[in-house]
Image 1 (cartoon, rainbow, N blue to C red):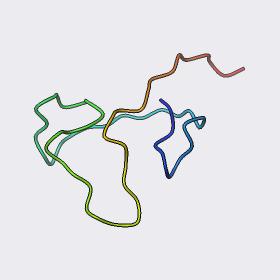
Image 2 (image 1 turned 180 degrees about the vertical axis):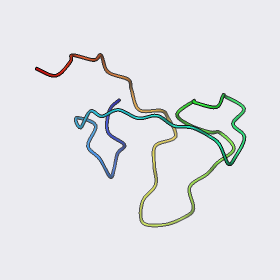
Image 3 (image 1 turned 60 degrees about the vertical axis):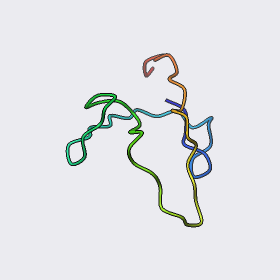
Image 4 (image 1 turned 90 degrees about the vertical axis):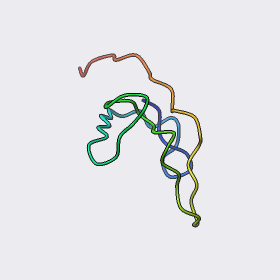
Length: 60
């Protein structure tokens, strides 16, 4: 997936596995975002949309 702006640049591709085990997620246990969870006010705010998934190219 792409990086999470503004903390990680979008060009920084990485693997993520989100698991909502302490707060129910109406979108599913492994969905990247939970519409019922909001970031607290602070110096950083995250995008409201899920970062894009990118194709896996394997390590060479």
